[in-house]
Amino acid sequence: MKKKPTEVLAALQKGSFSPVYIFAGGEGYFMDKADALLRDGLLREEEKAFNLDVLYGPETTAEAILSAARSYPLMAERRLVLVREAQGLKKPEWAKLAAYLQQPAQTTVLVLLHRNKALDGRSKITQLAIKSHTVQVVDCQPLSEEALVDFIVRYAAEKELRFHPRAAFALKELLGTNLSRVVSEIDKIALAVPPNAEIQLQEVADRVGMSREFNIFDLPGLLAEGNHIRVLRMAFYMAKNPNMYPLPMMVGTFYNFFSKLFAMHSIYFDNHRRQKRGEASQDPLRMVRMFYEPRVIQSALKVYDMGRTAKALQVIREFDHRSKGMGKAAPTPDGELLKEFLWKLLNV
Image 1 (cartoon, rainbow, N blue to C red):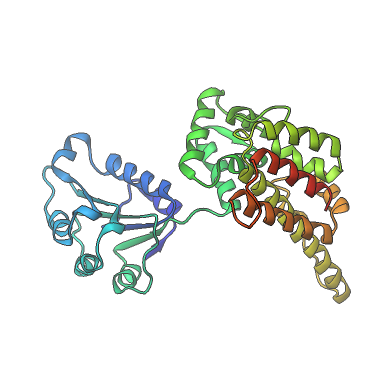
Image 2: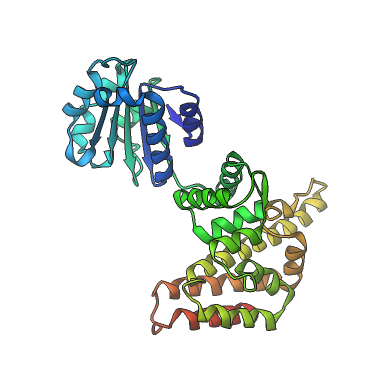
């Protein structure tokens, strides 16, 4: 049966185990966490010598996996068989596991970690695993933007931190979607502040290495206000420090802002039609309230109408391509690209 990673990890933390797990997908954090929880929660240290088998997909066979899984535990309640890099198993080897998945040993927990690659949904073994009540198929895909912000807030709460949603959004923008990096940074912050501290946006910017005076998360608001002088001042500073302010991160930050702005314009347009039909309106601020101050969005809606917002998204697309070396234009240093990028956004 299919399961969500957070659901499975919560069960493992409570000591609830299934006979077989198949973790598959591009988010390795969930697999690493499950690996650690199983090794530490299923077996005591003195039991691991005889009851823990760690195999690697490219180097093992179905016969070796089945032999380990069907062995009886020695002076322990269960055995644990971890198959790391299971994506390295050949298709014929996967097929040989089918019979075991239908009748797994109740004294063994078999875990297949299929890293950086989804399962083939058309294969018989995948369909069998999904239908089975003894196999948990865990889809470890990267989290969406909203889900990642929620994850940051929840994980921080486990560390006795109160993470403001805008601070969580800033952490996501600075570190990307790699959960291992995100968790590592939260752990560092937890060590540096008192319990139950409230973490605001500036705290994240300071601790992750951003300048207090030149914070990229201020830029959308400055653009919204039409503050050309401050934007250009920041642009020249950031252009001199491209390692601290990498262009791909800047492009991603502005895409996030303007794509939400475009969606809000669409909602306002749709609300106008709904009102004419006597239907209930939607709340256009619902998708941005977590990430931006309402006053910033209200200013932006006035400065950037739907047409200007669409043009801004075209500029962002252009510089996303140029920052990756795409297109026919001659290569330009990131610092110069950054200044040109912000200047075009000011003048769309």
